Length: 230
Image (cartoon, rainbow, N blue to C red; front, side, top):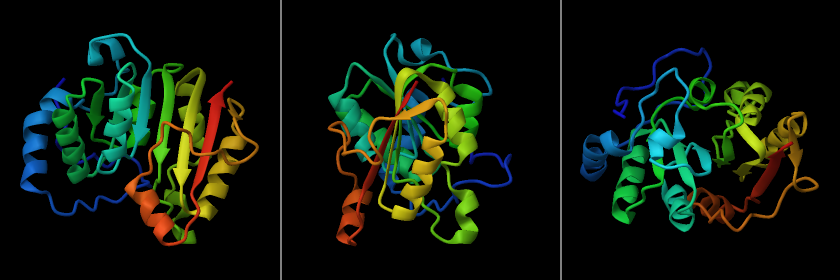
């Protein structure tokens, strides 16, 4: 499939991100130019055919906001029997993950550069995902910005609908007030059940991210939330 290199179109009034692109390195730019046609998926208002995308039938895990892709690539390399679909809007991060995919020879990762809410609503079939990863989303700490937080009840419901039975939703954050809000949103979703009493231990498949290391250096606790589709 061809890649969508344009910035995400302005469709929704409130978004969970701001496009702060930062500096693209020449290597990241080359990766976007040369590798997106191979590993990228263009946004399209039609449900994905995972078998066509990955060239095989395998469990599919969606990752929303993969940052620079370090964790995505590490998890994909250690789970070659699982296919990973990563969504990110920031172009340097997309370029960084594409470089990792190529360097490690990862055949089980594909990338969409678009607004995750629109991708989930338009492209991810119901009851189709083995798991969803949302690691260290922007907590939008100021109260006036809380409406920008990604994991609002409506989007949580959309995510839950896309999970297959016994599929999991795994969220990690180092911002305790946001963790409390996410826990409340997930606990109130009737399609989900908590695998822990409240917060979970970090599961073995999630390596420490650079955001986690940064948060711990600042004295932040890290909160993992692990829910399952009933």
